[in-house]
Amino acid sequence: MPEFSVLKKRRSFVRLTKGAFCVATRTLVLQAMESEAENVSGKPRIGYTTTKKIGKAHTRNRCRRRLRAAAALLFAEYAMANFDYVLVARYTTEMADFATICEDLVYALKKAKANFVNDEERGK
Image (cartoon, rainbow, N blue to C red):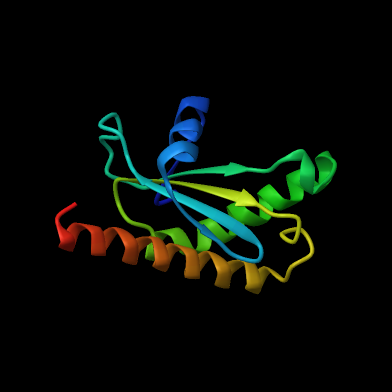
């Protein structure tokens, strides 16, 4: 059983697009934001996005599968509770080594965590 739940509603994706903290890496973009009050489970939530810019349907599906696999490995350890995340695939996601995708995801999650921890310390 995964340690996170999945974002499925468009409203959740749009909310993160407009006001989230973004970290761009070579293979993905991570958008992170504190969850709404409706997330009572306390687990992090994650969504996956690919655009037509990165290729045809089979390419987009492969990119999503790779992002899901990386998240399944790493989210339990690095994601913050009560946060929503969206992983956006880039055109390099399909051909990159899986280890590179995992490294980029860890980097992005650590950077997002540091940003929110620093904001709390400053009293925001």
